Length: 271
Image (cartoon, rainbow, N blue to C red):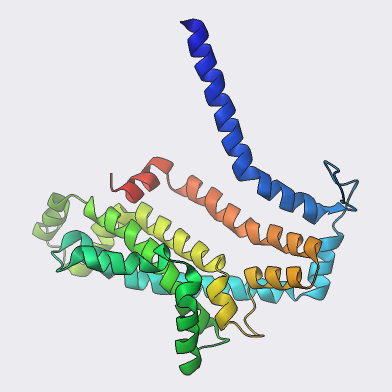
């Protein structure tokens, strides 16, 4: 019996290791390409290490401005997504909404189909409205992808709130703004943080929509990475990719420190 348990434990360990390697290995390869030099053929590791590609990225690309563009657009998209998602999620979670299933399907549609399928239509509309090559225009395009995440997370969060707490706050004299500020906001904070995070990263990492509505003044890191690859600068593109990863990792570690994982997952699952 003990040998069977030991074998099952070893199998679980092997499968877990294989899964971790499957997730981590692409990032390792990008890192090796970014910090390595003269890495050709079948070598396991680069023969030499260098920071030259990061220097080239800074010299050949206005990397600071590109990073400012990316973060500014993502922040605008996050604010707009939350402004739209909070009332929509509250209505879906706490009120009877006609054709609720169809409405939820419509909200999630941009996340369920290939992005290029509607990106061309978005670009056509945005060109007509002169929203090309502007922070606001690109951010609004990103809201199409970011808002569904926010609505899904916040609807689950709002749905789990105990109605008795809200009613007790009303009885104690809270008006609607006070109820939101003193009761709903603290209870929904894990979901709000998660919705803001997912909205920010959906915008920060977007490539397809950005490629169709950006301009010379609004190049973002994903677009710049693509342009560097197109120019044949694979190592420079890898260096930019490493820079692109840093904010995502910082947000992830910050979220884990600020919000307990079980609370975050509870908001996502509606538990």
